[in-house]
Amino acid sequence: MTIHPFDDGNGRLTCAITERALAQSEDSAQRFYSMSAQILKQRNDYYKILERIQKGDTDITDWLCWFLQTLEQALIAAQMTTDKIIDKASFWQNHRQHALNTRQVTMLNNLLTDFYGKLTTKKWSVMTKCSIDTALRDINDLIEKGLLKKSEASGCSTSYEVAL
Image 1 (cartoon, one colour):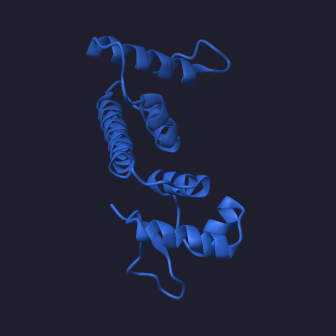
Image 2: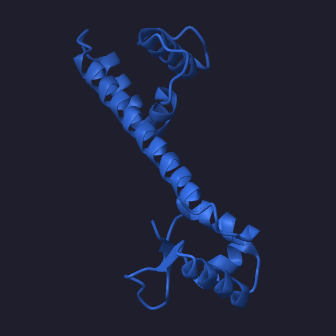
């Protein structure tokens, strides 16, 4: 942990070695999680634990605990991603008989992936570059087909969500 053979890139090298060691230990040609991505998400914690271990004694227990927790979080994130993919595939399989326009397919894919906030008619029109009237027609069509529904907690304006 304290050896830095290069002026730059030691962290990337560490991640590459970590990924390789995990792949070898699993004896698998493919993995569905990434320690590198998880470490990047927790970059500040990574630097804190690394500095604490480097300035302390030779006990690396804290580092190992951090590493195992990060590995667990990487596995959980991969499971969540896999679940989303399966749910999305299942949704499209269940609704394959419906004829949809390009805007509807685009927005449903957005909603089934990582859509942030509430879907309103205005947001639909902005994201698909269409009029509010066209957006409302698209939304009402999806409601009729059972792919969208009005959100129960709409507040001041009506919002919509995927009907799963």
